[in-house]
Length: 380
Image 1: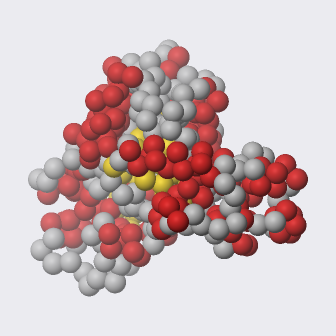
Image 2: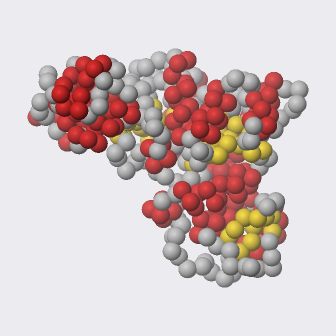
Image 3: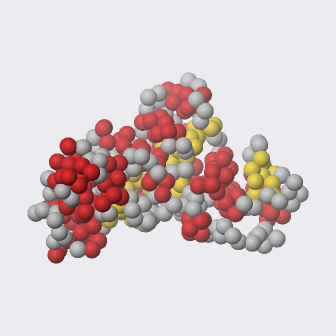
């Protein structure tokens, strides 16, 4: 079936999904070239229905033009039906749900396949690391995942064995949001023993893939998966990693994307510390607690997160100062304090204090000083 018009049964959201799927399946067409063509011609349907001359004028190569002209509507419709049968949905780069940070990448996916909660642009941090992690690495990943989630930060990882799984479980235990990005089709759980974990993430967070249903977890898919993990987050935390590991690739992608990279130090005689220590030597920020991460990201989050997102996470960017009896503001009235001191003196749970620090920083009411101390923004 050709693309010169919409079929009656391909109307509305279903028709749009079919068009996006067909366009991305076109041989020889990159995501970047597809986005340029959509922007020039107005929609994926318009690109698919365009003449070879029009596609050439839109900058598509001969191979891409051929791929677009031979894209199969029936194959795309079958894929859309598989996604719907799974309870999933297609999120194109034009949709409001598509992560704003990910959209900034030159090679951002044309669309994502998503199951679970709606994606948003709330503060997000990736936690990645070794599949064969040590008990220390698993404990750190789990604890960081839990505390970040409790502080209102979305935890993103890849559902892999080891550090990834521990980070997801920690976030779920903390009652927060977590996102698992697949290196396979959204219907292919890898590793298989994480089926229950994937179901828990889908129930309390989001599963994401850019690959068609049924795509196996081949090694060549994981670097692309890693660019999504790094691309949709404000920073990446590497817990344990060997030299030349996938986690190091994710960290370098984050650096290339202008995002923060954090590394957790480990034993100097452990091979799984070699990658994290190398990252620290190359400029990654050494972290020993979630407070290190939150305090470092505070200014960056205020600069990058749009106002609609601040509102969505309960931060009014134009709000008047909070109640004068706010415990942190009262403590800081006497001068700068470190987060540890605020936790100890307030008597509040660490996660509550970290969430409050992030909130107040995003409001512009606190400023961070050297040595991870904080003071009121209106102090000289």
